[in-house]
Length: 410
Ligand code: C6P
Image (cartoon, rainbow, N blue to C red):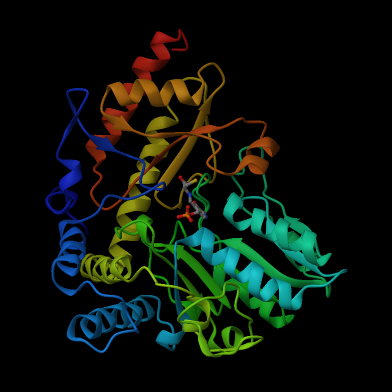
């Protein structure tokens, strides 16, 4: 069991007043706060080791290169990848998915091919596929969600009939950022693999919240962002199965990714360098390694239990509010709850909550197609992490009651 009161001491940003009230930070699905050890790792790197990687023979450059490559190995261990070369550092989930779409997609998709997505995808796992579909003549297909509030999650009974021979790639989110649904990623990957279909798992909302083992999932690609897992912004990862990466063309050209350049043609290095053109974000990668250490000390099974229990508690307490519509499953879910009131706009709720020191998110959460399908323009979302407490849920509920009263909705 996690002790959030003890954990809070590690996170300097939590110890502040907002509008004179203690901060209740419930916007963790957008970005999580950073523990002191991650902040210190980043500062130490800049204070002592900063130098460009892979390019210099002097002490600092060698130290920086060691630190960068150690971070790669650390991330590989964090997700149980078979080989550090399967870890490509990117700016985040969005860039990781764009990399697969641009590189694998441009080399492999053709007219008549189908990309299978789900109705609960974030725009980052939707727009890149629309772009590459337009360029290659492939088309998109969607696995639907079940229920007026998507309470049934994905309609898995439809999956077999949608995985037709035209489907070349199946991209889906591990955890939905607006429903809190945890998808059975291993089962989905297994069904795709049995038909020779490539899988891309969007791990933005899962990576910092539960154990993730890419070999157990048996996915081809897994994408995630550092800033949602207690790491800093501007760094993320694309995991790719080695054989896949080695068969893919570069998606960006520049220094660091070539083995030889001539005036008219060039040859590429193998992965991961092939996909890391230019100066990589080595300092933030080193800080990401520290975030992996931090989360592993807490224990990712314990994190999953803590976040899930808070979300279930919030779901139950929120369900007592008049007129509330709660999205996603009742019962087991990941650490977030999304809700809407017919009479009060999500932005008003978030603004009122802010006056009470509570940080929420309101809007479509980059899930516009899903919101439209559910007849919503947006929701309010509370999302939890290792430092959140049951008492903070009471503060949230009290704030919502105050808002509903103000608008005459309670
Ligand atoms: N969701 C949220 O508040 P980036 O921006 O690249 O770090 O992550 C994109 C992304 C991809 N997939 C999922 C499931 C996500 O939740 C996100 C980011 C944030 O829900 C910002 S909209």
